[in-house]
Length: 147
Image (cartoon, rainbow, N blue to C red; front, top):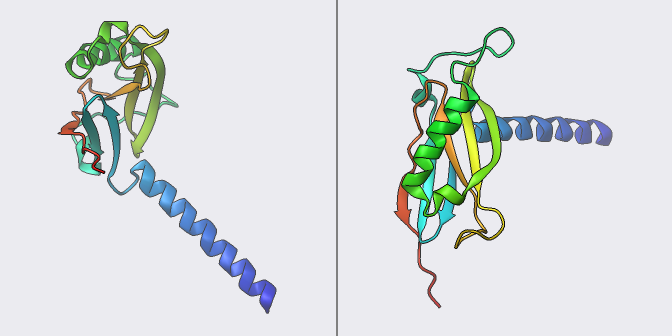
């Protein structure tokens, strides 16, 4: 009897973890990412409806509707809107993330190497839909710490 209870508990825990991971990835739910840079907070919100007007993509059978060079060019132009010394930032990582079935998102992360920038502790991501449009972050002042 006790072993049956333990096995049922493990099944429930496993199912709960899968649901939490799917929610975190945006499958069927919204998700957000927050970046602190200098004295501002940048919040990217992703909702299922954000992808309704974008083209579907099946990587198993089709070429990406947005090429990597075009995505990098678009991301670099937009990085200049948010980051001082953007010309010193280099690509740290390029990811394609699935958000909804057959809806994908480029995440192009930039970082300033070799202490060429005044703030080298933080990278900065730019998110692009496969139609080439940029996901706009909400820009908010960073909360001040009081003693």
